[in-house]
Image 1: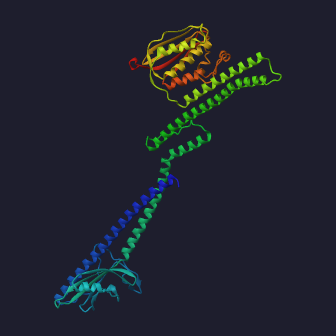
Image 2: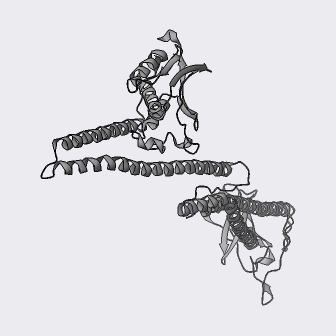
Image 3: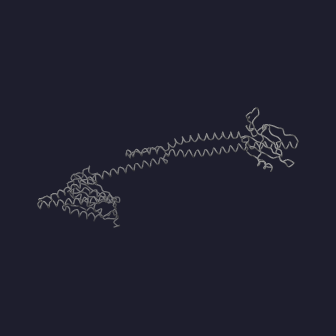
Length: 484
């Protein structure tokens, strides 16, 4: 069952119960009011008859027969005529009967014909005790309201005045009222169901649009779609806004996943390529060593040296991959105050051994401190200096500056520079320029440097012009020297 149908049924049931309660209340009030008017009419007429009887007993005259007229605005209606004689209790007339103290009928209204008003045992006991009695009896299948009142005689006996009135008109009126209420309530409930169904659909239309959009996204994988909503910022409006925000987040996450998958595929392809070359070389050299007759001693030494070099290359590649894996896994680095000047001097001295004829100037390095991991910073400096040694032929200068709570470490070389199309990719894994492919390396150094710096909440960037060299800048949060 849909929400729309449940909402409409709930609304309709509540309305139907409310209208039924109101209709029952109206019906009960009307029924009680009608019966009270009928009782009052009987009591008024009976008391007039009692007064007339007492007057008659006092004067010695006989009470004449008469056709009584209803009181309280109730107009008599003609009853059915059976052979010229009107059938009693078929209309709204009042019926009168006077019983003596022995129970015999002394006087009666002419409209009773030969019918006698009954008197129950409970009524007799109440009347003998001097109390009036009102009850509903059935005469010839007709419900009749009957009122009896005693007349206390001087002899101590009791005469009884009985007045009755048919309830056929009351029943007909109440039946008509009941039918009108039932039909009116049914029409209102049906109309309310239709109106509620329409407005429920109107109110739930944004949910239908959300459902359609979600289905379309699931089929087309198009996270750029959005749900349109021009209504107020109510619960549904906020739902649409939240859904669109979720779609934006999913779109961003989907793009990142696509990029990650592309990077993973490219990474696997690059690793396969990097591993294939040294493994192929090692296998070829092993085949040379297995030749028979064997190659001479000098050739064997050259082959073993080649195998050792390729093995070292594989070890470096594996170590670099392990370091990248640790970075990708979110390995936590220490964050402590580290002095920059001795760290830079140590790294420059270590790299200078690789090319003793190259000058690495560190005079412009200030004695400042940064927040970071000493070993990770040292690894980054070694990577950048080694990169400058390999790809630049001139001097290398290292300098620091301070600005806005950060320390910038700049490593400048006078090499051939980096082409503009390579600059955006310089920190990607296995990205190597054409001139770099003839130099030893894995193409992972700058990627490792970027991962280590970002893990320490720092940044690394490069500026380069072809023919004028490159400048790599590392920025780290500055620390106070007093914390060392």
